[in-house]
Amino acid sequence: MIDVARALKIATDTGEVRLGVREVRRAVKAKTAKLVIVASNCPPNEVERFGSARLHRFSGTNVELGAACGVPFSVAAVAILSAGDSNILSL
Image 1 (cartoon, rainbow, N blue to C red):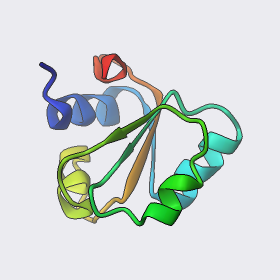
Image 2 (image 1 turned 60 degrees about the vertical axis):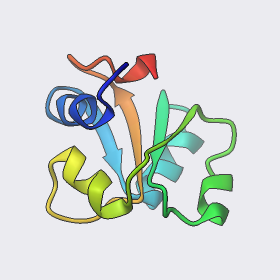
Image 3 (image 1 turned 90 degrees about the vertical axis):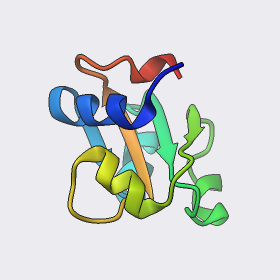
């Protein structure tokens, strides 16, 4: 079993990620997002806008997702463009 929070932190530090719904939408539209992770309280209408991207639902809220990424603000969605040293893409 993969520790999603730890894998997210490693991906944020060593890979390339986009934080926030607007940035994730751009990455999905450009087809650069390999995986989209959404917080449990991300609005369903926003999740629908991510289209056919690989989606993983994070069990925590947007505040917990932001903390898992190592940023001092809440994050409703994260797009993984490059995993870096993380095994996050195996979700």
